[in-house]
Structures are given as C-alpha cells and as structure tokens.
Length: 186
Image 1 (cartoon, rainbow, N blue to C red):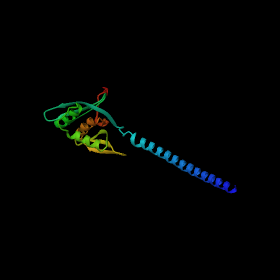
Image 2: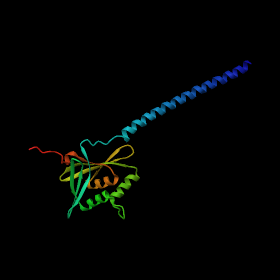
Image 3: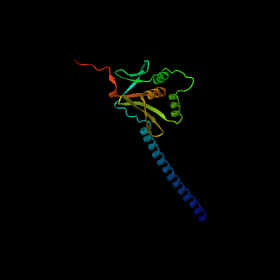
Image 4: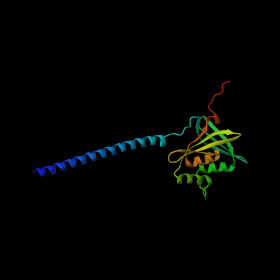
C-alpha cells in the first residue's frame, strides 16, 4: 500500500508540475499577445491614421479649364480661395479627360501611372502645389507605401491629372492663392 501511495503521490506531483508549467506558458502567451496588441494599436495610429500635414495649405477643387490658341488655363477653387495657372493645351486636355471621365481607346500616361501605383500597393494620398520659382510652379505628389510616406516632385498639371484620376485632394499653398472673400477697405 505504501508503494501505491508513492505512485499516486508521484503522479499527483507530476500533474501539479505540468499544470504550473502550462499556467506559466499561458501567462507568457497572454503577455506576448497584450504586448503585440499594444504595439499594433500604436503602429496603426502612427502610420495608418496619421494625417499628412497641410497646415499652410488650402484644399481646392478643379473649377474650370479655359482653352486659348496655344495654352490652357487651369482654375482651382473653393468658397473663398482660388488658384489659376497656365499649361499646355495637351495637359489641359489630359486633366479634362480625367475630370469628365471620358473613355479613351488606349490608356493615357496618367492612367498608366495610376495603374502602376495601385498594382504596387502604393496609396496616393494628396497633391500639394507648394511654390513658384522663376515663374514655374512646383508641386509634390504624396504617396503612402507600406510604412512611410513618399514625396514625388511633379508638375502641377501632371499632379492634377493624377489627383483627379486617383480621387485624392489637391492642396495649394495659401500664399499662392487669391482670396475672393476679402473685403477691401478704402
């Protein structure tokens, strides 16, 4: 009987030891899950929910395109601010094709760019028209890859053609816009 008691006691002790080991492993797994959850929540808010800074910019929409003999005029506007610039007739046409959703027999360059961006799982975020130097406007196309933003130098006309196709906002540096809501005091 003493021998039987010893076997039962040994089994009991082994069972208790296994239970402690399982509890310890389970506790470690829970700690790891909590840590990973915390890490991914922070990553999500930092990377995926972060708004790209546009503090000194005004969000504008395509208002109109005017064609002259040798050039076109692109006008971006919102309730109080507007921005206009000159470009080639071809660029004006590319913007209008996107704006009016006109079907073409073959894809245009801007359509191909959008297709490449999407196939490589890059997300177009916004277009910024930043500055003017020596009568030339400079713009930046902001793209988001897996974990970071990329800024691409681009002509405003190309940027607008891409922004319309990608359905992303267009921001113009406030210093470049004209304010049609300001009242002039005499």
